[in-house]
Image (cartoon, rainbow, N blue to C red):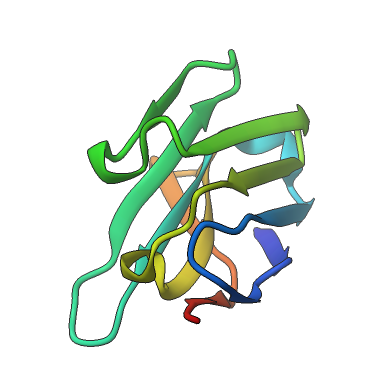
Length: 118
């Protein structure tokens, strides 16, 4: 079992920046990769950014060049968000994929609200 706690959300003006942090606890040795997803009202949850244990990253097209995901340890993953737009408004969820008995397990945080508005 992996527990995830996000922090750093809030209200920011268009063009501003926010940094989200995710801290994992529990069976952190079983984590393969971590990522950030978001879900806007009335929309499906979507991948924002993903980073493997080896440091390989990938990003949604809509955030490339503006967002940066990083891992400073096996249990922390941050998302630096610059040049924020109104369409970035959503609840952001941290995800960790861990090795379970029967396969890969998706672990989720409780979510943190990001609102981009003037």
